[in-house]
Length: 400
Image (cartoon, rainbow, N blue to C red; front, side):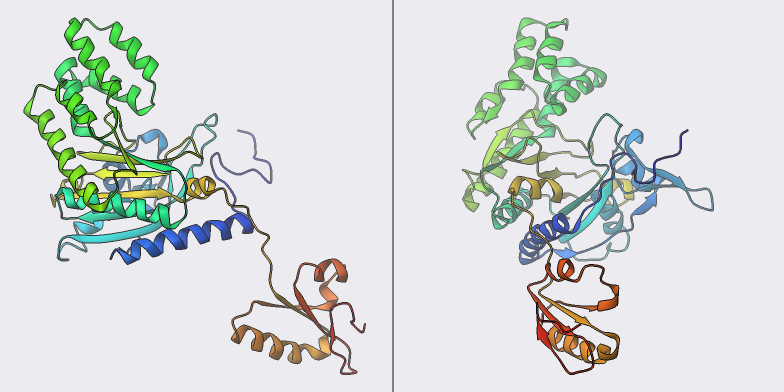
């Protein structure tokens, strides 16, 4: 193994420079503020978790987990998502908290990428979990909250696509018969490889009716009336029940007045396999990737020995910031006080007065500046406290 160059970073890891950091901070503050107004309490979890609990419960493939060993030989993972850690807390520390519980988080998660992928291996998620409520009202609330947060961030031209993983799973099992075959076609849907899906359908030993039913799944994208077409494809009670849950959800979204913001996409399959019911993703015209998404995961908390329903979403802060298309602004400080050694105390007093008024102020010993004019050019206001003659001049009039 060759030694990395001095300035190289691990695959998928990125630096965030001041301009982008501040821009993302503005977006974060806007989204978090809206979430707080909906009554969600903030929570944090450790970056490191046990592999045997969070690593397996997260439903992230082993190839995407960052693993390491502690001094006792236990395998640890950097958290690949936040839903599983919060499920752990909800089933233990927060077991006695009154349900439904509304929790929110803002944290970095870690998923290893292949070198050719070009995707970040560490990214920030801001999301919510609504635990203990199995109703369509809860599903509608988290979707409405995500839409409200995106609007508050002034994201233009976006839609939220809503599906139901239970419907997809039921239809695939009805037609294909085996979980192995169903998993192959779920992969096509997750990758949005509809050409591959169609080609695979042609190669299956199916009746013409079942082949049409399977191909018809790809047409189940559009307005609310698409559910009528979906009803003609499923034959089991489980499939009809899934569509019934979607209809109840759409009634809630109509009450919120969100008909124009949402579309139906019954091809929608999410990255995490713990979803059990409705799922959704937000898309912007400005970006080819989902900005965020979520869904219902009623079986996850059972892995922590406390079965209860739950739903939630997460927004990718990096993608949302990119979709907003705002120009990065230079990071500036309004005031600089350039001083000589004998006037240090005076400079400190001046800086303290400015900071007390809420202004950002930099103190700089003149002896530490290589180019005085270039250094001072980055500030809107510069005061010079230099020399012993009591001179205190504005920028450009320093006595040196």
